[in-house]
Image 1 (cartoon, rainbow, N blue to C red):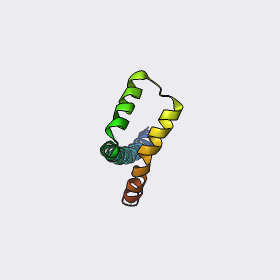
Image 2: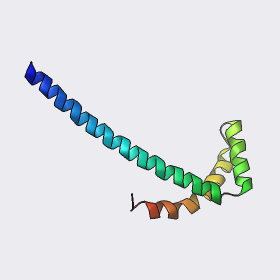
Image 3: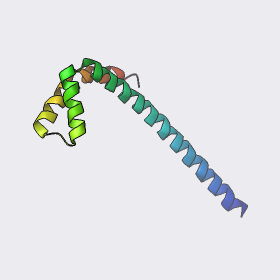
Length: 88
């Protein structure tokens, strides 16, 4: 019985370590995405922000306006995410 208990405790400890590592990675990714989001908000024009807010309120946006807004907003973010990639 002690052998079973010991084996289960070892398995649980290993799983806890894996989960802690996943949590750490998710926290780091969340932080990076929050920084990118903040950067995109500062670089977006008031018209783009208004259009985005309108799209959120109406549900799914038309594909043509979504592509244009996404393309415009993602271009400035790529250099920032490339710069922060190696440091992560």
